[in-house]
Image: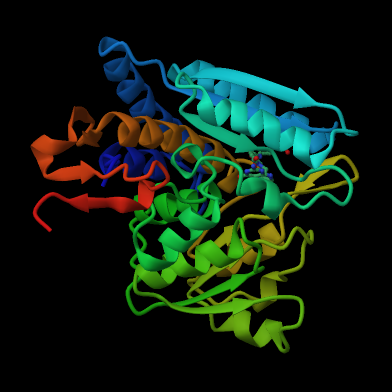
Length: 332
Ligand SMILES: Nc1nc2c(c(=O)[nH]1)N[C@@H](CN(C=O)c1ccc(C(=O)N[C@@H](CCC(=O)O)C(=O)O)cc1)CN2
């Protein structure tokens, strides 16, 4: 465990929120405080964690999200670099920028803001990011590490959902979990993380038949489709925990994938949109930047304190320079 979250402040943040609503903003704030404490301790060792965001084109939503990331960096003491490339940029030019950032020892975390313009193949370009700096956790080595239980850097949105669930004290063992959406950045890693936490997971997508019936059996429901209002309140099982990852703009308003008011009547806990999962994505990114720094410098954040990894029995085998997933206990 490279960054060990202290759960009590997160639990208190959940308790302060409205009954039945999982206030992602409050939990994200509590997490950001812990990240800030870690960056202050890193600063005392002369280390300034640095995140580089590469963005191509002028997608309006991306503009908002990159600004959220910049603001979060400023808040927690992470230096922020923005490489904003024109929409006409070629794939090889993006790869060139990523390679330069890979080689820069002052950069700890790199992310490529999605979506990319036009027909560009994001999956190919993402492989150009050094897996040790891949703070989005989208590199195939990190995604493979997630599958084999060895990833250090995991995708921010599903990881943020897991943090939200644990801060609300949601027990997952043996629970029937349904994930709607099979994207590489949310649905698929989400289903792996829930299975890792001992839930029984069904992964649904656009070809799934009888979606309403499957949803009605879910004790934990995670919806990540980007289709506003797809999940009707009447589908939701009484007492379910509902996590809405979707963000769409409808008539100038931000909406989720779940009919919030109707679903709230059924659910024991539900995340709103906005102020639900979105802020957790950004806070978890900040956590991942500190993770990347720790892996590089052989450090661990344990119960809020930064310590040498060796003193708690963890070593980071950097091997041929591509393996955050080669973290292993010294004793093994
Ligand atoms: N490289 C990446 N690209 C994208 C990711 C990602 O994790 N890595 N995820 C999304 C966009 N995203 C972060 O990049 C993101 C989405 C939403 C929010 C957020 O805080 N939303 C607010 C609402 C803000 C608004 O739209 O007005 C909320 O839910 O409260 C943050 C980050 C796709 N691309």
